Image (tube, rainbow, N blue to C red; front, side):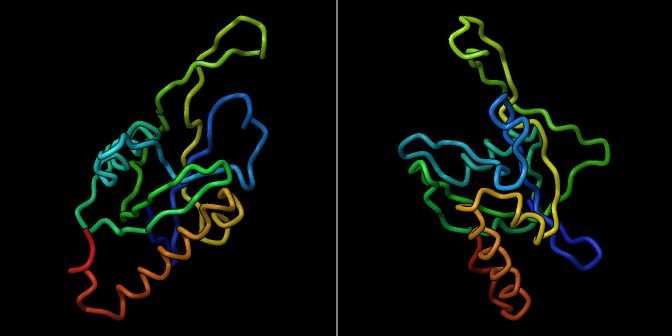
Length: 159
């Protein structure tokens, strides 16, 4: 999700929940994402994951901007789309939970949110906060938005 504030682009990023990310900031944030089953429609999965990780159904009256895919360090392929929107004034991040043995080898299991924060950042700050492998999505979004301004047929080529 992106928005424009004071003529500046801002993007919504998610901070991973759980004990491994509690003290990590720069380079740890991500776009809301998840895994698709084989043959599953990728845009539909992206919309579902956004809602599961952020706790907000993506209401988009405009177009979905396809941003392509990247390969993360661990080999995971991430496909991304962007849409223009905003968070409600009283927004609180509510994501799915996952279970993890914590502390390690203790035999005790705790539940943690997949995402513990979701915030808008300026484009410059987002470049610092994002996992480095996901930064190309910002470049592609900027390029698509610049093209949207100069090409009247742009909307015909989006989803």
